[in-house]
Image (cartoon, rainbow, N blue to C red):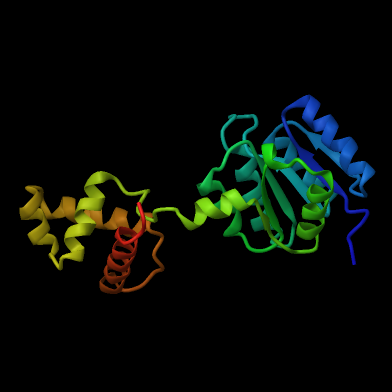
Length: 219
């Protein structure tokens, strides 16, 4: 059964777009209980109104970086069942990943690709009902993402030597650095690859598997 009358807190720093979206949402059964222009006001409005859906831009004050996304993730952690739709101007894979990691009932839509009002409203209803809606272009980028992209050049080099079966001491000799420096690189690699807590030996194996999969990806 379609969701109707779902109260919305809308966060968008562009005044014209915010007003336009507010009118559109009201017409299609999503009464806007608060329309704000920054991430701080977004968090406050959600606490005050307990909406059934949050719609937010990613880039907005106070820092004009990823304030909206960080606020959305924080709100989801506080209320895991809170449906959230994020609107973005660009494909930003790390933002989409952060949002998807919070579970179902989320949406990540590209502003320039929202060209059909009926589709947009249907996406909002899907998220409000606990579903997930991700723009196909974002999905494509997520699937083609290099898991090693977060590593520095030196960290990738160290991981490549680990994949060859080299010990920390052997890697240190090969790269003309201290063994402590290699240990630090290894720690950074395991952290950046977001490997689950386990024995260091097992985590090194998982890191090597990630490296081998990545090296086998189409470039």
